[in-house]
Amino acid sequence: MTRPAGSTEAITIFVVDDHAVVRRGMRSFFDMIPDMVVVGEAADGQSAVDELRVLAQGQAPDVVLMDLVIPRLDGISAIAAIKQGNPEIEVVALTSFSEAERVHAALEAGAAGYLLKDADADEVAAAVRAAHAGEVHLDPAVARKLTQSLRSGRGSQATLTAREREVLMLVAQGKSNLEIADSLTISERTARTHVSNVLLKLGLTSRTQAALWAIREGLVPSP
Image 1 (cartoon, one colour):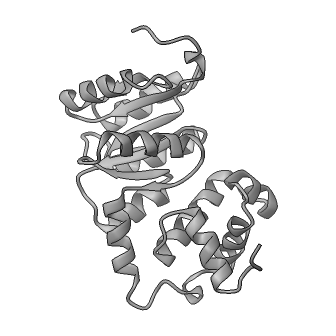
Image 2 (spheres, helix red, strand yellow):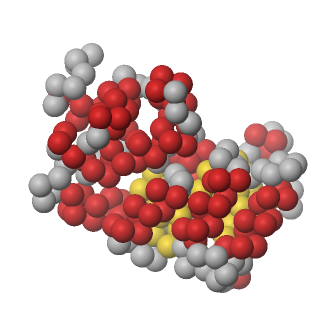
Image 3 (cartoon, rainbow, N blue to C red):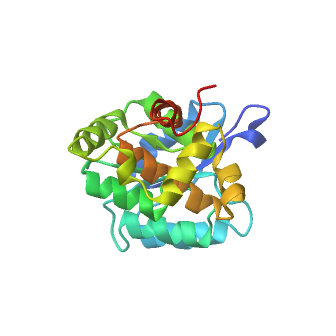
């Protein structure tokens, strides 16, 4: 497969899905995006973990697209294993299920995004770019469901732990996950998990919304 000049800066992607037609479709899709390239694939969770361990000895992929319902090792367990062995690899969950419990489990395992399989091409590309940039990306339909489930008495300062409030204030100051990690002397992965939990508890879908929420609630002064 030929790539355009400058492809050394392309976002490298590894696809995990037990359906060959889905993997082929993903390859065809990413072939049309100049700055993205699929560098590997696996049909089950255990194979994905094993192959990524080998790839990481040379050049680890930037982003893994992970189906959650796969043989041998389920997607949630595979995400946790990948992040434990190679925390620099970002993982986006890609599944047909939008239950809040699955979303929480995927994010807690270390996923940087959650997409439904009926997401359009632009949404998939956006999720990959967000993950590569260290951001959390939720499918709009998933975000709506989470927001609805969090409206019944949750979504307030009282639901946040002291550490999550610290993280929220740093997000409102425009700090990246790495800067938050440095400020609080925690790992970048832990910082991202805290950011994800803040967004989920408050029923928000982006760091910008979180910053505006913190200003509105008086946690930080308005700029």
